[in-house]
Length: 140
Image (tube, rainbow, N blue to C red; front, side, top):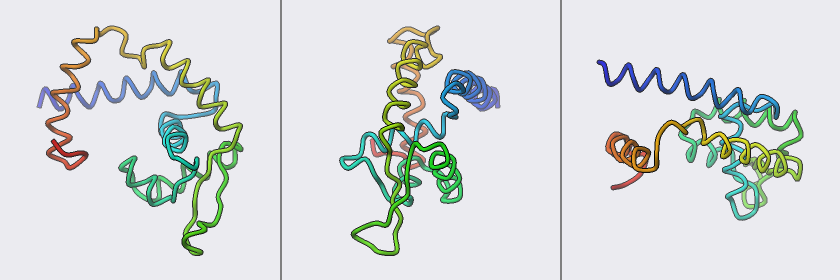
């Protein structure tokens, strides 16, 4: 119970701190993650279903996230040329600019993990990796 409570509280603390850093860009960490994912894709676009799969979130969350990013002019929806029924989210030039600036701010803040050194971060990742592998996030 103590470990679970600590992980849950750490999540709340980190999310609040990250969201505070992203607030000047009118982003939450969830919207930032979606933008980063789009920048990593070859074409700068992905089907909404693929975004949900890669971020491991419910389709409704993806729709809400893309809606907010689209209203802000950071992504645009377009028909999937491979599947006339499917919808892609595509990052805009403004979205690329915002994600670069936001990433610089997050990196300067050490992603709010600056109180740990590299060895501690590696150890933390290793400990949490076991849980994530068991949940199917990625293979061992």
